[in-house]
Length: 117
Image (tube, rainbow, N blue to C red; front, side, top):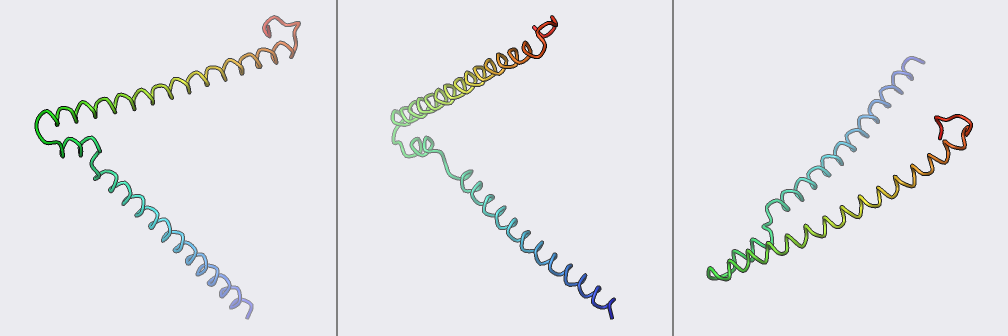
């Protein structure tokens, strides 16, 4: 009698675990499908510069659209470069403060030994 209860409990535990795993897998698959659709939509959407070029009439207007696109790209690249340089400077400042604090800690550990100075 006790064995039947144990087997029934184990069986129910497996069933519950399987249901939970199935629900989690279903959610993960839905999330992957949504991400894939978003990436596909982004990849198949033409850039605004291309749309301007395509809609421009005449060689002069097409050339102007290309030049405008290049200028916009250069401005965007310039902003990205400024952010990158600011990030590098903040990291370097942090490293300098960290090194200074480490040097201070090392000097106070045992100042009578030369290798700590």
